[in-house]
Length: 94
View (cartoon, rainbow, N blue to C red):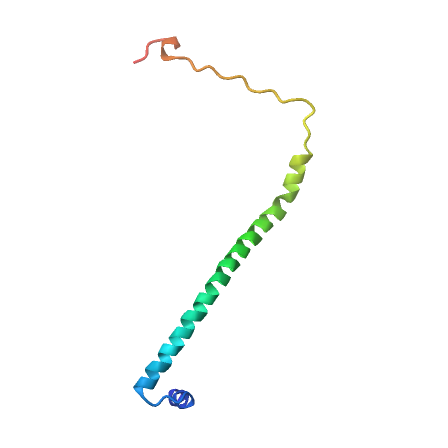
């Protein structure tokens, strides 16, 4: 009964009028979908920004501690390690 009530409300009495109504409704749906796409893209960008803001806030104390470290003198640089050649190794190489 609901289907018949719907058809009466929309004044759809023939298959052709039903096809026309469906075509019109489909066109509206496509139009609305095209309007929504940029909004969805922006919402994803905002979600990503909120994610990064959360990370920033969570790591802010760690960063503050890291920047508070002040070296009083330059740190020593590790001396390069010499890798011996096979001919310099003791014993025979199989």
